[in-house]
Amino acid sequence: MLEVFETKRFLKSYKKIKHKKKILEELQKAIKFLITQQEIPKKYKDHELKGKFSGIRELHLGYDDLLLYFVINEEKKLVLVDIGTHAHTLNI
Image (tube, rainbow, N blue to C red):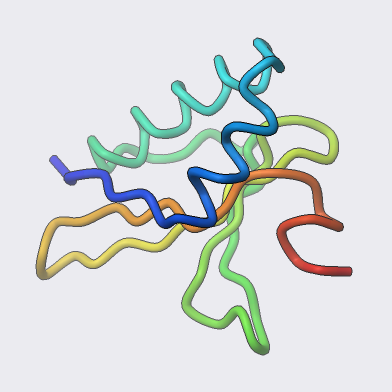
């Protein structure tokens, strides 16, 4: 089982979306899959990012709501990087 760590950016973004109950429910489900290292259902469209985000993974919590994260297997850590829309998380 992985231990969860949250970046300052994630915590700041989380405060902005904490009123979105459906997204929070999906976040809890996704984190459960991640920390138990289970296969992530295809509906989350989990994939690794490229370019300046290389090494970071993204999964979809809703139509335009994303979770950015990475795993440090050697240390058994799940690091939550950011949460929000494509425009917010990827600065596009």
